[in-house]
Amino acid sequence: MAIEKQAFGVARRLARRRSAPALHPDGLICPGVLDVPGTGAADAAPWGVPFLDRTGRYDAAVRWSRALGLPAGRPDGLGLAVRVEDAGGPGVPLDLLMTSSGTGRLGRHVPLPRRDALAGPYSTLLSYRTGGRERVVAAFPVRTGHRRVPGDPDALRRALDLAPVRLALCAAAPDEPWRPFATLTVRAPRPQGEPSAPAFDPYLHALAGLRPTHRLHGLRAAAYSGSRHGRHAMLTAPHEPAGHEPAEQGQMPRRRGRPGS
Picture (tube, rainbow, N blue to C red):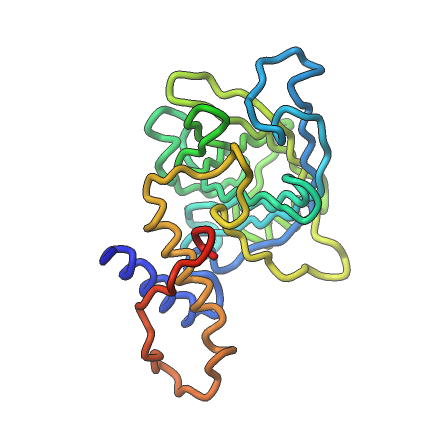
């Protein structure tokens, strides 16, 4: 519990000072489409998850970002956050938060800084309960030719203006090969301007049969909660002088309902 309080407090302070998420403070919001072929038509083994086993096409919001917000041109952990609308039915979204990583049994759990947004996969780092097994979810860029896309928002915008980016979404347990379950097509931001970023939360927006495991659950949920509180602190307490932390700083809110709520 003590380490969860620390994670909550650190994330809240960072988010409050930035008026942005504690990590991945700057990003590019893009529209996307997620196509799930399902397992019936391909006569493939079912996943045991309705969302993965049935054929479907879903609107998506995609946020590409840099974890530490380092200057463009320097390697950084690249983030790929995906909100799949109505994945669990009308008004029930699915959030997948992925970070540039490796593909091996250990590498898929470790952030890997990159310059090129299409140079390698993005993974959830932590495992998901997928049907009856624990699997990591990952997105593999589908490269065309020698296209290189620097992993900063301005360069990504220019690249997406020329052509959409496609990624194959896959899942695998440590003893399995990567198995695709969907294709994500990311398009350029709309000309009228970028919408505000959704409040991505993989715990709050998970599906039955497809949700993060409880490993490090409390720590990660505390960090997300602290980041959300920090982002809204300036709105809820505009009268406080700069640098002043409210009395409840570092205290986690009481949990009610699902983790992260």
